[in-house]
Amino acid sequence: MKKRCSGVEIRRFLPGDIDQICDLEKRAFGIGAYSRSMIKKMFAAFGVIDFLAVEGNHILGYVCALPLDESAADIESIAIDPSMHRSGLGTLLYNRVESELLGKGYRVIVLEVRENNMQAINFYKKHGFKATEFLQNYYKVSIDGTRNAYRMKKFLDL
Ligand SMILES: CC(C)(COP(=O)(O)OP(=O)(O)OC[C@H]1O[C@@H](n2cnc3c(N)ncnc32)[C@H](O)[C@@H]1OP(=O)(O)O)[C@@H](O)C(=O)NCCC(=O)NCCS
Image 1 (spheres, rainbow, N blue to C red):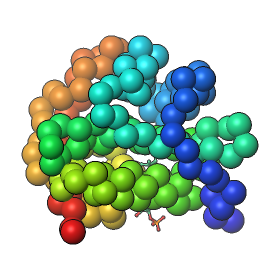
Image 2 (image 1 turned 30 degrees about the vertical axis):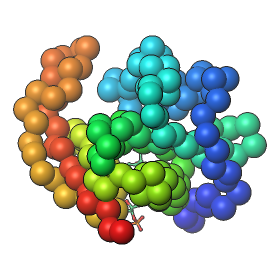
Image 3 (image 1 turned 180 degrees about the vertical axis):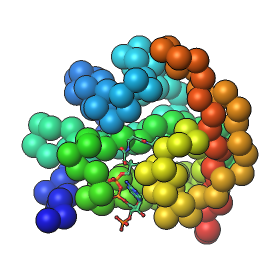
Image 4 (image 1 turned 90 degrees about the vertical axis):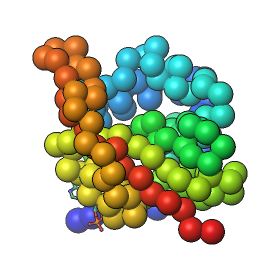
């Protein structure tokens, strides 16, 4: 049976959310997860646009975008609890951040994704992104070196 995300509330990040976000990050990304200090820095960055998907006190997903310049923003991270993958929650968060970025005047969304992360690449393609660059050794991985990535872009329609 398809999982449902109908009882979910969308809200902004609060400092008390950090522990749950770190746990979610590890579950969603495994060894590629951002460290606690990187997550803190990301949510505190100037101009950050974030949204959390929450059910009761339980954080099920988050998205975080950062401005690159006046017209472009980067989706720094999006992660959904693995128990809720393919429930439409990623789409709910993505649509929310995209409409917020559009409302703030951004016209291009950029992101980087590991070359073998097919669930994310398919997700972004479904939301209108196209791969524009191949980035050799883009991600540094603590255990065994580096990972290649794609840069993907979407131009927002007015
Ligand atoms: C990528 C991610 C955010 C998608 O969230 P989600 O809630 O599972 O996605 P949705 O249910 O909204 O899926 C929307 C569409 O994306 C595509 N998609 C999502 N997961 C997919 C998968 N495992 N395989 C193929 N396509 C997939 C499908 O087109 C899907 O539509 P459909 O279910 O009608 O076929 C989620 O898989 C995730 O958190 N992954 C781990 C963290 C990560 O890799 N983040 C991206 C870093 S760049």
